[in-house]
Length: 324
Image (cartoon, rainbow, N blue to C red):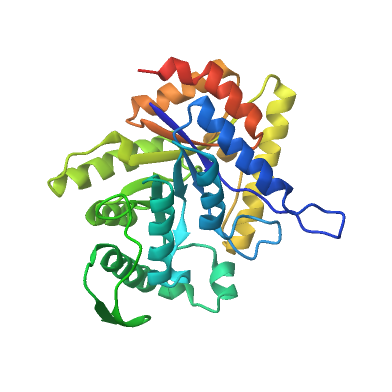
């Protein structure tokens, strides 16, 4: 199996005595150590206007991490295409791929937090159309060796050739977030790898992986289990008290993000929180990872609220169980 990381750094806000960069620096050091522990990748979110410092300039932070590492894959989970100028974004991805010697995993998505679309003064109802046009332009930018023009609904370009070229050919590896049958089919049709979110139950994941495999094979391609990355919140804890605190923290964090998304139908329960996490001893974590492997998951992305502590214990006590 393969293990990577998923999540965000945080930049604190406050007065002159608050070190806003401390969270970012800690996150960079965590990724450097994680590479030495055997983790394959790091996938960073993109969010805006949260008030609690989630990563917004994702590619900037990944560039810093890329300069401090040598093998760690540098992933986005996900860059929300509707918010970006597609030519500038294609240039930034290609530049990072060039500087990192082909280590970029370009995770892309449509966005789901209504508050972010409102912040950009952009109707969320345009997300699908903007995503499609942005991706079309990025693919043209990455693969065209001669000048081209584009006259679309949202973007226009005149006689441009986009530089630099990426190391990966024909472009950086594309990943796409999916959470519904419609989006799973779209990921397969576009030829992207698939990212599954950290809130789905194992039963849902089994159905999603099976559907994706079927859709990929329907296009005539061979399904690769490593083309699916599944995010899980992982926390190695040693007592019932630690476990209960971790679940309570998880529920509070999830409620906060859902409130930001302005999804009024969101209802969380203790049982629902437990279904989306791997919290417990190393033996418990190993059993849960085995259960994921049994339903066809070979690539797990760890979101670790305890930071490097859990990453170290998972690397020493769980990962060796699943080494080839």
